Length: 323
Image 1 (cartoon, rainbow, N blue to C red):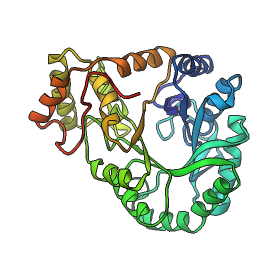
Image 2: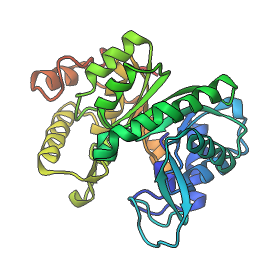
Image 3: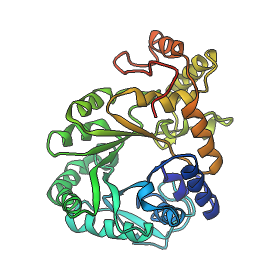
């Protein structure tokens, strides 16, 4: 369960609805939760910590992220896509001290003595533009050694990166050991540009968490086309058209498009799990239904034949999805 929505991404979620969503997830067998200081500027971590306070810590896995510090602000209204967030402004900081400070603050918000997985958040050109090289250098010189130290001292089990682009994965895999990569939006039913980096991860033994399997919501049914998001923004027309082609093909095989979207990434051997962003107990229940939906092999064959998925990307081979 991705917990960006618990930070009020795009729309407000009540405290009780957030707790109910997490509790429903645990009840239905979801055991991994991903959050970050950036999500609602501490709100997602705070809510996740409250929801899991009564849950045995050995029963769940939590990942959070470093790379931003939260500074008090008087700014009001929607900011960075979040509404009714906490009164902080995120500031990038990949230094040793910045990572340590971010980690300690996350522990406090989550109410936990340690974290299972710690990820460096949003490195790369997509986020930083011309400053990307300087930010990566700052991370390699300070932030990454800090993460190694936290892992060595038993404060985290695994370390890696949580990013939205392929190039930074290629770069860092050539420079430093990583346990895990959370790659959001780049390996989905809608786009498989990440298949090469996933192949590389499989050879190197790096586990991959596929984030954004619905491409920010575009691969979930919407009545209002204007509400469709892709890469955290309004979906461009050509992307909407491809999503519509995918939906038409899925409909022909009596398969919900979100079910195919949720199951497709799991066929790649590097992928450990698909991380769907969920904001309510109803969405959690629906995601479980989609993950268990029996998909006919003929659907994958038609998607390949019509070139809607890359021939190099493995597809599920049977009607039974991998858990």
